[in-house]
Image 1: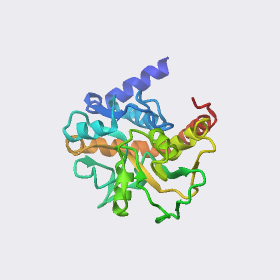
Image 2 (image 1 turned 180 degrees about the horizontal axis):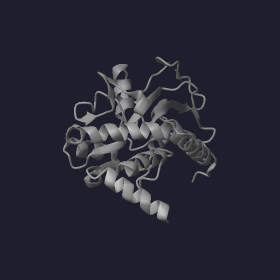
Image 3 (image 1 turned 90 degrees about the vertical axis):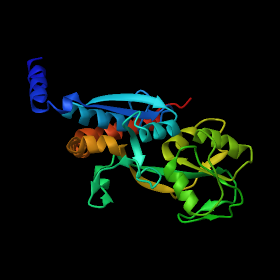
Length: 261
């Protein structure tokens, strides 16, 4: 009790300016387990909370459709999003941890992989660079800027109207497309469900394996430059700590073992 009180007092004394700062994060209204949830209880959320607590920053999580989140950051209705890939689609209005002119991957939240999924028995394949025997548009979840950018650069047809990977799985089963790309964890969880097990398969080569960052609006970063550097640095330190690494392994293991509805 006394130790907690002393720690609280020391933090308050050491960080009077940070204590007045509130960081408003818009987060996806759908869980992207194990990293983010609408309530701010995912792995990435925990990392941001731990660092913010050290610095006396107040956090607010506001769930919304991901496309609305991006627009709300753009118009400064909120300050940032917890997991953002470094993509040309957002770098004009969002700030990332940088090292010189390059984004600093050592201060990322985590590396997150996207995989290719196809109807079992479909001839279409992915060799890590290009799709082979592809005759239909690639299905991409709406609002997934990194995946949309990557498929767009390949110059192949794309459909990105579905709100999530499961909706695209249903399109695969209906024969409306041959392949879909999406989150490795989300897809693996869906594949355990009876309606998809044995009917859709995940191909072995990742479509992308990219670092994702806590990213804030450039206006928020410009208003709090020293604070954001401290926040990104604190997150990087906590992420490398044995305690967080253990928490991450446990969370990933628990998620993999949890029954999926």
